[in-house]
Structures are given as structure tokens and as C-alpha cells.
Length: 388
Image (cartoon, rainbow, N blue to C red; front, side):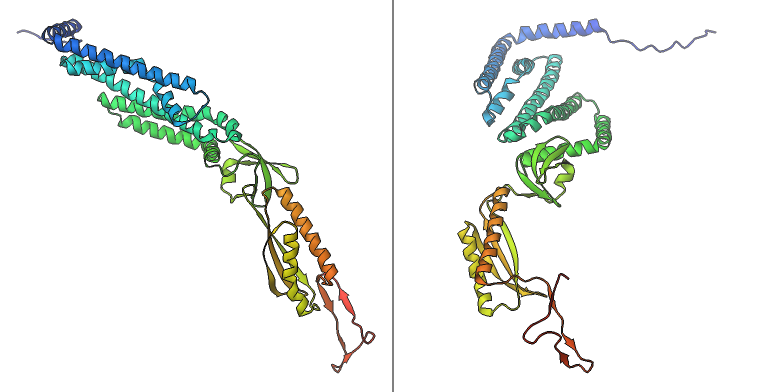
């Protein structure tokens, strides 16, 4: 009786020598059978390679001759100048194997390398175009140059990471690799990083929003909540303002953009409203003259009269409102104009005999039987003046 033992199964390694021999035989047969097509394809591939190289040199030359410009042509020229020789070589090789009917083993290898080169090259072109557009968008505002320089390192890193991560996934997918787990891992990792650096990224994107949307610039005066100040610096994390009272105010970019911001600098005019009250003893004819009198005062002081009129009966006054515009975006000019017009109104009312009202109270005294008595000399009034 024969006793047999089960030998362990050892995986067999591919016969590398046989593979090399098969490729050699296929290559020799290809060269023999298709040498005419191969020569013609090599000529065309070589021409394509040098043509792409010439286009690359033209792009680089245009960028050198127009250094400092940020137009669309410069952006495209910069992207073309970043064309790699590996991409140009694989474009030529792909044309050769397709035109010359290369063996399947050659065609498969060249096609894989061609796909890799195309995906990587497109990622490089897109990165240059995106960064060029960002620089172009902000180059028109020299006040944002410092903030952009600080942000560009992080922007370049983020753009490069995103584009080349997508490129890597596309390459692996074309190679037949299941990328579902990789995409899920990148998604989870991105969420984790985003939650860990939520505050930093929030302020960074707020700073980029200020750079691109330009709600305000350095040197402009803005108002939010109860704060009025001039922008001194826009950073990646915060914005610094100089209040009109002199102190420096620092506020995070995210918190600032969440508020309702009034940009004082971009006003072609500033509107001012004065509330004016005159005493009830004012004669009706004199009260009717008040709007025209105020209009003349405003126009004589280089301001624009808007409207003026009676608005109501107050506790101690007949109330008027005056609206006028001072044609300047400078707060100091507006402040001085308001001062001059206010004092001119005071002087004109004094000259016209118009009295400003202030809270007053008149006391009348009666006897126990309800009869009014006169605790003051006849012909006069006992007026108790004071503030309520």
C-alpha cells in the first residue's frame, strides 16, 4: 500500500524569461510586418513631439516678455510653459502605436503611460490657470497684495492637493483599481481635518471673500454695530481698524462678515438730518417761513437741500425736520460741513427772532373752590423752566 503525503502548495512565480521572449518575438514580428507604417508613424510622432516643444517654448517666451502682467494670455502662456516632456513623449508614442498597429502588449503599456501623463498634465494646467486667475482677480487692488501673498502659499497647497488627489483617483480607476475605499477615506479625512481646523479655515475663507468680493479696502471707513473705523490691515485671521476715537479695533474676518457693514468711503454724498423744534408761541407765518429759510442756509453752504417740513407737535415744541446732503466721501469734510450749517441755522434763527424750544412747564394755581387765582403779578407768567 502506497502512502502519499500532501505537499504544501507553493505559488508559482510567472516565468519572466518566457514573457520577455514573447514580447521580443512580438516586437520582431511587428517590426518585420509593419516597418513601413512604423517608419511613417515615428516620423509623425517625432514631428508632434517637436511641435509641442515649440508651443511650450512660445508660451515660456511670452511669459518672459510680459512679466508682471496678469492677463488671460499670460495665464494661458504660463500653463503652456508647464507642459512636461513626459507628456509630449507619451502623446507621440500613443500616435505611433495606434497608427502602426502595435502588438497588444505594447499598446497596453503605452496606453497606460499615456493616460497617466494626460491626467497629470491636465492637473498641472488647471493648477496654473486657477492660481493665475486668483492672482489676476486681486492684482487690480494693490492694497490687498500683502494679504494675498500671505494667503497664496496656503491656496497653492490646497489647490495642488485637491487637483492631484483627483488625478490620482482617476489614474487608479483607469488601471482597474477599486477606488471606492480610497474616496471614502479621503472624505472622512477631509471631514476630520475640517472639523479640527474649522475656525482657521472659516477665517481664511472669509479673508479670501474680502479679497475677491471687495466689500471694503484698506484705508476705507466702515461702520458696523456701534463701531466706526478705518481699515488699516486685512489679515488671514483678522481685520484691524482704527476707530475715529483713536483706538485700534481687532475683529475676526468671519465675525466681521457676519455683520451688516456700511462702507462710508464709497458714498458720493453723506446725508444729515437735523431735528429742529420751535416754541408754541411762534406765529404761524413765521413757522411757514422756516423751510425756505433752512433751504437757503443749506444751499449757501455748498450742500444739497433734500427736504424740510413740519413733522409733529411735541410736548414743548413745534417740530421740523431738515434733510440735506454734503457732497463728499470724506468724513472730516462732512463733519465740518454739518458744523458750519448747524451754527448758521442758530445765527439765522436769532436774527429772525425764532426761538428754539426746550422742555418747559407752566404751573396754574386755583382756589379750593376751583377758581383760578393769580399768584403772580398781572400781565406776567410764572414759568418754571427745566428738563423733564
